[in-house]
Length: 207
Image (cartoon, rainbow, N blue to C red; front, side, top):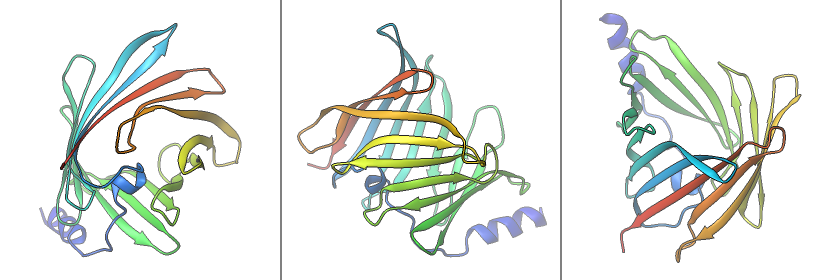
């Protein structure tokens, strides 16, 4: 119990504000909530991988999210607390994720169980507009994801291992946008495996 109280005390130590999710995803202001559906596409046939519902705070951060599997079962829920985020799972312990601001437009995001066992950690590097420049995994795969943009839109993600060897290259295309400029249909194709995914995005605005 003492270990848990000490861990919770560490989580409540103030840190600088994290980057806005709306900036990261290049979404317009005024979004209240979204629904995201991700599909695997094989021979023009689509298979649902997950459906995610997100509720936003007024300043563009995720207040609550729920991810459903193909059969409609909940596979993850997240809830924003004052200084950390709780990730809840139906079949394992909850994770408590803390974001710590670092110099040069970086954030370190670390997740632990109540027993203070680290589950994952990554360093997020941002561009000046709040979009992601790269993500460095520090705990599981140790892969680095590099994000590339053309005309202010995400165009490509290159994944490399810790020895700088290419793991995959994902080509991203926005197919359709809504009136406010949100990408509502996106495709992602691997240049290494030709694996194709499609994302459908349904935003709800304040007005």
